[in-house]
Image (tube, rainbow over all chains, first blue to last red):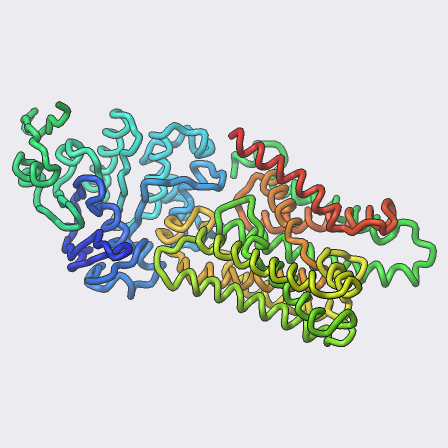
Length: 252
Length: 322
């Protein structure tokens, strides 16, 4: 289990995360939602040691995240940030093979390549595995990065706005893959997501953040309500039920 | 990898081509127009030994620097390492006069330069990373400002000393293989050897580091510890090459980028070998031109800066279009 216990973070005297406690349930998809500047990405970065926290503690399997060995932690949790610009020219296969670094320190053995092959197949990247990343479309590129994380084979997978700049087909495709990772491989997925409807349709658990604090936390059905969304976004969001799932109609 | 193999020459063969070219250059440099072998060969061998060491140090330091900064148009000179060297040499002449380099112990000057550059880069790193979330760009910018400060300090003192002394300083400011400090050659080999062993322990991280900080952290690399050590390694490499022949880090830009473009790989063992070979070719070839075409009327740094400058402009224009 991964949990944050009253963590805080300040930038230049201003608290962007203020005493947040969150625990992640294994085997689920958890979404962090909230308005711009709520601190979603900051929280995600602190829970994955990309950023240090000022106060409180982040516990991974009961141990403070800072006391973990770097290599061991990289086998436990992986994080994919939203801006993935890489300066190096890599093929898809080469990128995915980097996911095995925590296990083999760059010298891939037979079993490492097996994981790479599997991740490529899993993300349906086989036909383009020898293409360079910069030759791919946005959706394909996002799948390639996720394939790297799949090859890393960690229990916890953190994703920061994985649907950014994707059209609806690719966005839905990514969400289905994440669901499969949970169902078939028993992974735990935690993501920052901008569109409430994607969170509503595809996550089990939602953490609603505003101004660096947790406004509400709970199962999807308890969060996607008019009352909570009003508190969160400061606007009335009509909610419709479509096939038993809640859709927020926030466009007009 | 299969993809690489299918596109023209494999990386291995490209490295063989470079090795061949470097061997030809070395042969030309050592054997061209020799009348008296017993006189010329030992001298030329010694010079070649200095060229090879310098070329290697510059290639390695630039490739490492570009990997940790994730930027291919930078060289370590941006953080002011050679400006610091210039400042130190100017201070010595300012304090001891034009005969300074005869008075001051060479080894002491050399070691002092190296230690100062190491201390400077460590301090720079400490200063920047004491605060969290400081990016490598802040480090570069701070280094740039310090470099300018050092350069201005040198210029100021150079304006105060008499013209004869100034000529002595100026000779130190331009890289040249015509007056190598051969007394320092053996010590330099030892130092570079030691640094190479140190780098060896970190080399496994290099490919993953080139993906950038977030990916490197995700893959379990102790990012701060590794970059801090790499920065000290860079300082030693730059210090040794600068103290031996003068400031020549611009060459690094040329050779590192030629290696990236020609080899088309991200793997550091190949990149470093390639950059070092290109470096040997450029330096041996350049020095050959200096000695036999320009008959010592120019120094190698002029040639390197001219070729490097042209190449740099080409890079900028190309990046601009992309």
